[in-house]
Amino acid sequence: MESSLAAGLAATGIDRYPTASVDEVTARLDLDRKQLELRIAESVKRLNGEVGKAERIARHRVLDREFSQDAGELTATLKLRRRSCAERFAVEIDQLYADRLAGA
Image (cartoon, rainbow, N blue to C red; front, side, top):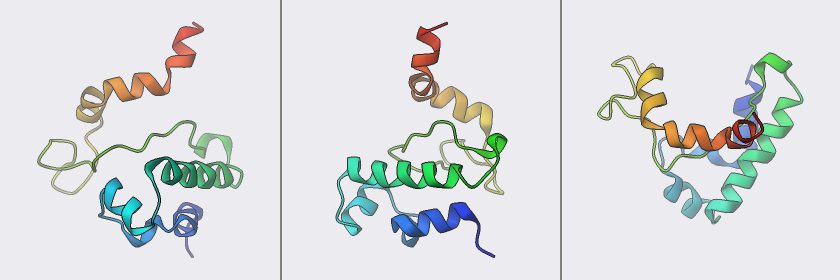
């Protein structure tokens, strides 16, 4: 059975280009980046209604590139190196939570 997340990505059309960059996906789907991000946000919102609170995606961001082994973000078995990604994308992560940090 297909997962809700996979079904949601299928609804956006993104799943047809799993290894494509953001620029390639936007070109193939004839969307600009803002439209692509809106489609993803709509899918996340819809899918969050289908899962428990602990499983929900609270915040997300579309990066300009995929994680890679060469950049040290993935292991040889393609598992995410969390510490490396947290360090490399610290600015982006901080931006996701800027409103919470400002209110603290």
